[in-house]
Length: 169
Image (cartoon, rainbow, N blue to C red; front, side, top):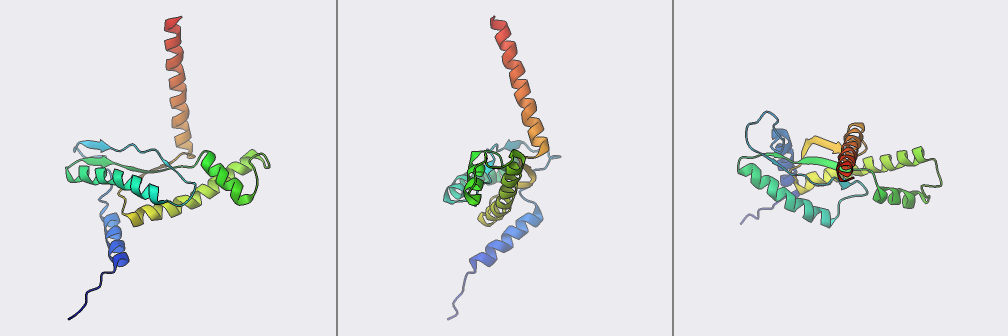
């Protein structure tokens, strides 16, 4: 009797590659199908994924896949947060410094380099997990266009709040 073996890594890699080639996770901007948008907060690029990430994003991925099967055009971006204390603390620990020890621009550059290295690792891990985020809808929070959008939204919010205050005075 012949024993069949299941090479999990080879089979999963084959299908992950085929899904990428088929672009089955891509959002179609020209489609007339109803849109289902998944707005997840960008994950901090402070280190490799852990079990909590795997569980959390797999639950979200279930929804994306279900909606695709139901005929929806799913908007599910791949995004990373490269600003903030988690990244700064990891850089400080790794280099045995504090942000006050060096020039602010140099520290920001060190944090950016650290985060970008982690983004590559995390993106590969999402692929291994079979997550169906669309890599063509990509953003990270230190990009110039992203900063511009957030600054505009802050200005708009401030303007609305100022207008509301004027109406109550």
